[in-house]
Image: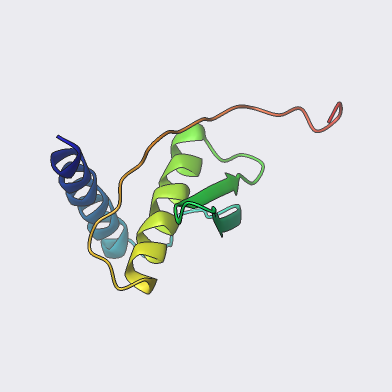
Length: 92
């Protein structure tokens, strides 16, 4: 089941990337952090810029995950979990 989910996510990602490649602008990226855990998994965190929607932040995280996959000479990646939340910077 997991390989099927990874394949489906990859197809969706490439379809999304192809539709953005046709447009003149790159998608909003936000501030990104990526690191590798002790287990060898990668963690991608994106802090969206002001005005970015949750969908744009999630798309930026998926794009970074795909870039990390290609940099590691791999073909697939699996998203284990996702979390999005709005943070009030006045109280943070």
